Image (tube, rainbow, N blue to C red; front, side, top):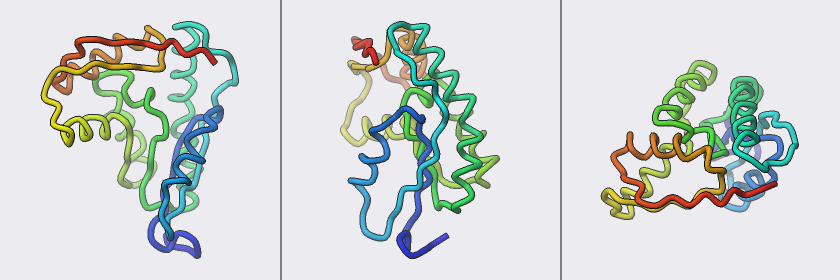
Length: 166
């Protein structure tokens, strides 16, 4: 629904509560007449020092997804953005599951998520089959990421996990 500031378009952005980058980054990219309305998925503010910590975070985000979507729907967005990559690429079909879950709540609004954007970018760049991946995640994500890439028809010939502690 259009309003004073979102006379062109209104995005509903879903992002973890601890993420302090998505909102300002998306706001920096927006054009006049477009607004980004933010709903946060609760995530405990705890250090990520291991594979187990990463798994807990992904589970917490997943458990909060529907509640955040219901909250953002009250401002009547034109489309949804899942502002976290890990959630949608945590397996070969996780993005499809997420799209189905959010479609039930949103009435089928368009949804942008990393699992759709990444293969579209690779195609636009002419990448055919073999890729190298640098990930901020812990190595626990490798199995999920490999399954994701395999399902898309890409061969991840080299993967480097930064194991970024927080």
